[in-house]
Length: 137
Image 1 (cartoon, rainbow, N blue to C red):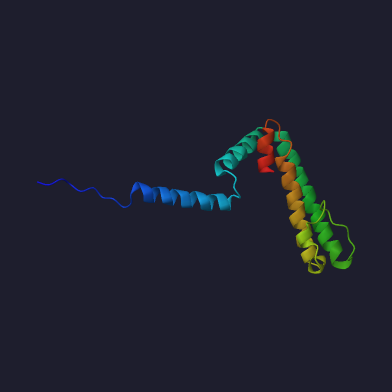
Image 2 (image 1 turned 135 degrees about the vertical axis):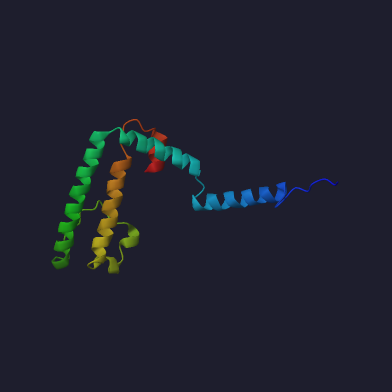
């Protein structure tokens, strides 16, 4: 009786090439940052936020306030072209003429208000390591 042949889909060299190609695509998708470091930073932030009920209540209060301000701005800006928006500022990519017309100027404000809120959520959570705060922000 002869020896049994093992099933082999690929060899070590081919497996290494697949791994290198995968890591190259992963680095491009994550802009060179380690997905594992991002996951650990996120876990640090979310775990400390989960044991900070006061911070969560402040974030909820801020969310409701920002939503209310955005709703008022949406209605005002329909009739008043110079209405002041609630956002901290508008990104340069949304400063073109088309973004100054209703409803697009409301979308630009909503985008920035959302970014403002996420900054509040990711900055100043007690216990989060400063380097992790930078990554999640």
